Length: 270
Image 1 (cartoon, rainbow, N blue to C red):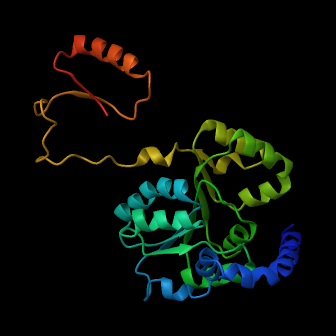
Image 2: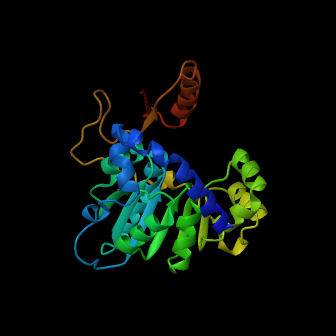
Image 3: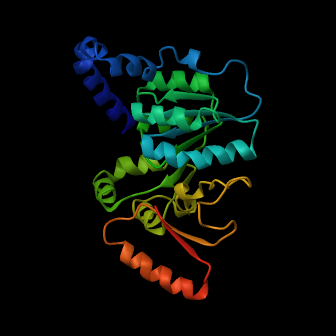
């Protein structure tokens, strides 16, 4: 299976090779493509040996990067000595990672193309002790080479929509090979876990841990912040945010009922 995959990959690369100069003329490829091939990767990594374990976290794009933020913050808080290397695939994912995570990770890199020599270079330079994949972006060579190197892989915030499940069933043999590479698969819901079981994943490696997005720590207001005008400090407030047309009537009805039990309740519609 892997040999056939890599043979097809070589054929595609051979056919696309003449297009490389044209691709490099475009700004977005001129920067991203060499980096995804591992060119200049060493300059992007921290110098000196890691004082703790190295964790490689990967997220596909903006949504997955945002989901990864609570995980990164939690790892940094619980294990301050670890080295965290973060990768993203898309340009917007890279931009979001730099905006959200620059102060909490040791390096932000583009994800490698799924080409064996490129991946080998990444593994040699990053030297990860653990690989964590957020939600999706499964690549056969990456996962296989991590496994052969003895590096455990964990899927977090995993999800399998009905459409994805139908597609995965058609390629069941390849999908089983992909998911067998994970030491643990942490799914968002019991439905996702059930889909994985029916695809042949070992139930002992499946866990239902909810959605990472809900693990984001809320910002706590500082003591010197003042309430909005007309609302006394320490008041109980019902906040309705991002409302749509027609929803205000329902909000007012709920507020009226709550007001009977909490006479000092204030309502803010934002």
